[in-house]
Length: 247
Image 1 (cartoon, rainbow, N blue to C red):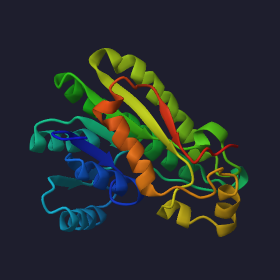
Image 2 (spheres, helix red, strand yellow):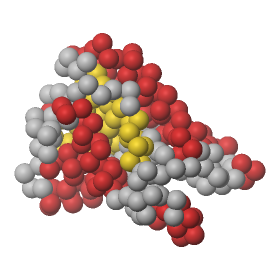
Image 3 (cartoon, rainbow, N blue to C red):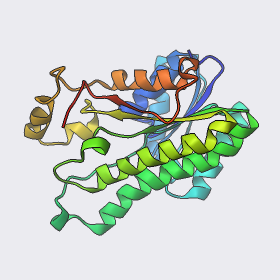
């Protein structure tokens, strides 16, 4: 489904991002993964190469909240592969503290990685997409961007912002054949969820009509669809992948 496509995936070293990288590789894309540390990037590259020895992959570790580093890394991918077709802004962090205990520095860190980094990636890749006469941006949102959450205001706030950025850029960039969408996963079996109290996971899972949390692969499949030509007339959409979760 992605033959001859080049994709950049931030937060691609683990969890949903790693599942997206695997899925794109299996569908014949050339993939560059961005991670927070060079060590984790190298480990992910080794794992991917061992599993998919014929794959064409690259790994970089820019500070995503620093525009100059993001622009440099995007251009490195462009120099290696000759083009970029897909940008997946997946990197993100969360926190669960109530407002009285919320560290303002932690709030800023969440906004820097979950929002500013998305802006940086989009700004850096758009000139390349225009040169290519089109491209596809997919941002990782969350179900809490619709419902909020009981504690930890920074994460849902950041994902509300991602939805706004997604819808606004889809309108701004549509005339250049650049599609901009987002995927809003529900409770998914990732490291982030594993760190939550079991009681909280069970309580949230009990409200999911499908009766279980999602798997990273199920979320990655949504990214594959939106990145492919099957979604050629879909833009400005925030696609929920949450088992019909309701508030």
